[in-house]
Image 1 (spheres, rainbow, N blue to C red):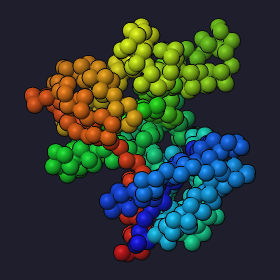
Image 2 (image 1 turned 135 degrees about the vertical axis):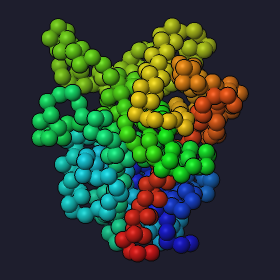
Image 3 (image 1 turned 90 degrees about the vertical axis):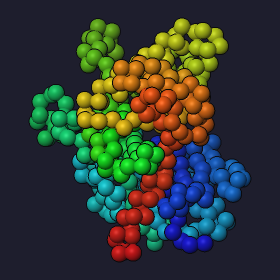
Length: 402
């Protein structure tokens, strides 16, 4: 087996998602998830050759232990020799990184410093990089940044209406996230209409527990709904999305909330969970809506879909033409109800859903979900891991002159 596979690592605060991918065709040789890290219940699940295996992670139950457990499995399956590099998902690259970057000490320092903008994510990402360096000391490590795709946004799209010095002195601006996902589905949509990506304009909606809407003009991001943090934008699974900032002062001054309580509420207790009072899982809310006619479930879905439709409509202001809308992410790919509700709000933009196609294109099926007389809307399954593997491979080939 050729040693051109990329091991893609995505470290969360208590998890490690991994895939061993052929960067040229996206084929996944091995994948899995280590979870409950930092607890004695830490486990690793690995899928290889159609089989699943689960194992405990030894003490101290951290990312290093998880990666060592993964390496042991790779050795047992005789797969270590086929790995040519490690590609890391890093959430925040700030303004410094708009391309995949070979990791060195300066890059690690930058990722650490950027943790001020994404404290939960960047710290975990850096932990994964350091652990991977120890486990694979001879292999190149490449960082692929979630924010990179959005670095093409014009200043008018990323500057907040606050004193400009806060941007110049402290980097307070809109950065956007889910960049690898938006880039991947835009590439796939361009292939579907047989146009170069550089000539395409789309609005992509990545809908999952975290949600973002991105305007893509001539293949580049020109606006996106997530901002300096992943709290801005449309309503999400547990995040509020946009609210009147005055609410925060009201909560502090009139209702005696602490800033920590507000942070927790807006990030973990709001969104679909907060409005429905049922769950942050869209499937549970849809069940309550369809089978039990729960009014709070109905309201949560209506608010969620209306906010997304409003964001999509507003982003037409960034474009001079629109080739279509792309739905992706766990909800975007699987919920025909959500997609129907969103597109029904966009009839003024000439979107007419094909109900049968919308029902068919779920659970891994991708395709057009609008009628012949409609502007196009597609479901396209995202594959962020393939983007990371592909960009890692391309960067290293450029470095070596292959």
